[in-house]
Length: 155
Image 1 (cartoon, one colour):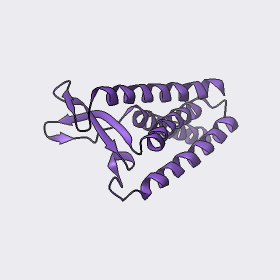
Image 2: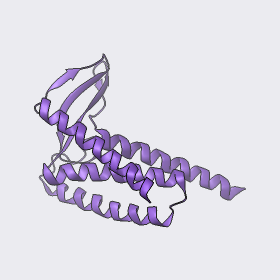
Image 3: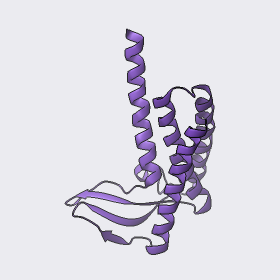
Image 4: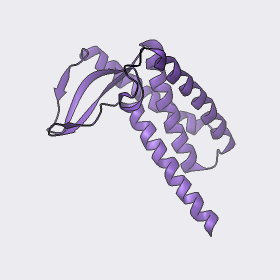
C-alpha cells in the first residue's frame, strides 16, 4: 500500500507546488507564451473537466467536492483489495492523487487553478493542471488494465 499512496502523495505535492507557483507569479487571466503551441496561464475553474458547469451558480463546488471524497474512499478501498495488481493500482493511485489535489483547491480556494494551455493556431485545448494530467494518465492505465484483463479471461 505504501508505494501506491506514495505515488498519490507525489502527484498531490507536484500539483499543489505548481499551482502555488502560478498563484505567486500570475494574476487571473495572465498568459505567458512558452512555445508556438504552449502557454502558461492562470485560470480559475469552478466546474469540472474542461470547465463543465463552471458557471452553474456555486452548487457545483459542493457536488464535485462530494464526488471527489466518495471517489477517494472507493479508490482507497480498491487499492487495499487489489494491492498486487500493479497496473490497476498505479492507475488508481494517479487518479487518487489528482482527485485530492483538485479537491484541496476547491476546499481552500473555491476553484481549481488551471495553468497548462496547449493550442494550435487559434484552436485552444482547455487549460488544465498536474492533477488533471494525473487523472487522465490514471484512467488510461485503468483502461489498459481492463483490456489486459479481458484478454486473459478470453484465453
